[in-house]
Amino acid sequence: MCDVKKLIRKRDGSEDPVYFASIEHSFDIIQKAHIATGHGGRDKMMKELSKKYANITQEAVTIFKSSCVPCQQKKKRTTTKGVVVKPITSTDFGARA
Image 1: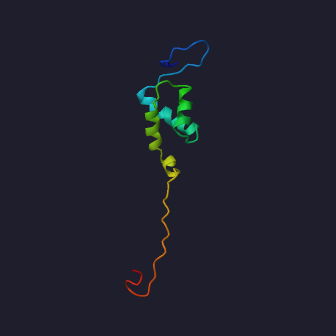
Image 2 (image 1 turned 180 degrees about the horizontal axis):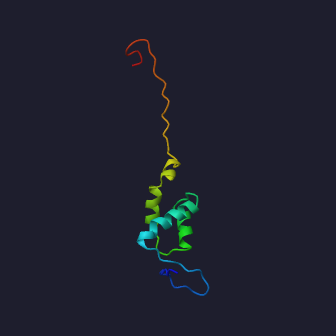
Image 3 (image 1 turned 30 degrees about the vertical axis):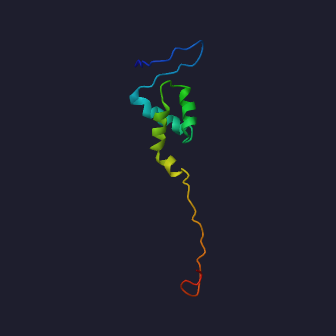
């Protein structure tokens, strides 16, 4: 049987343990939380991650979210609609001046 050692936060009473994630495993942890929230945003992911992990930062989640291809594809892009301009029609050059 393999023994896995994990560092946990000090807990009060019968709380579930909150783990400290290693740097090597943080990408996989954030990815699992991102998929579990249905490609959710930063706040949804932070809420999900704070249940089990203590040291995952918002910066790491933001960087991961910016590199997620499906999230970038469904990101709303604001399109500026051009102003419709009616052309001035005149009969002679300088007729309106």
